[in-house]
Image 1 (spheres, rainbow, N blue to C red):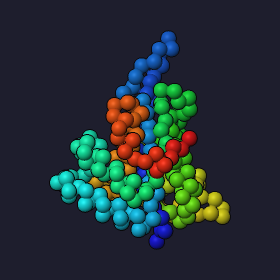
Image 2: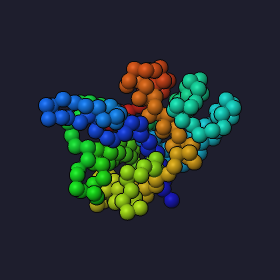
Image 3: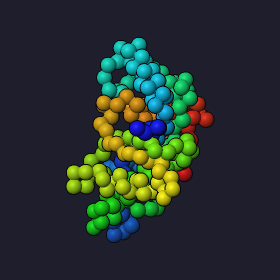
Length: 221
């Protein structure tokens, strides 16, 4: 059994935000201008405590549905984020402004690479979270995304992630699980954290991310 857990969710999408025509003009593709990944590190004890407090808070607000950034009230949103402060849970996040990003998004003709932008940034935030928390034999729990599937399996993606985080002498990741967030309350919290960071980045509601104590938010560069 894994000694620790890392739950990872995202906000935005890993697609190119612009295409460029022959004259060099940029045309928006409809993809988001940002990509945010949030990784929450938990011991089994903190994981159960977090699940318990989430359920308590939802019940107090009379909210019985899946927690989603676009459906919860502002007061419930803030109350849920306060749980992170209460339990002293650290979040490691990576925020990429895709309007200024100069790297690669996808590699045409190399199916096994999927979307290298997504995979690269995900392994960066997971690696940082695990190393900073001093964890080994971690179970990484990721919000299920069909783009990471190959031949109906996640094996290729999982092997890539492990190869980037594990070493010959240190097995930091023991297992990778892809889940549907509606069944996992802790994953729903990761979604709220991503949403709060997004609201701060876009300037639409900076108060949300400010609910979380600054020492519990670590940006991964």
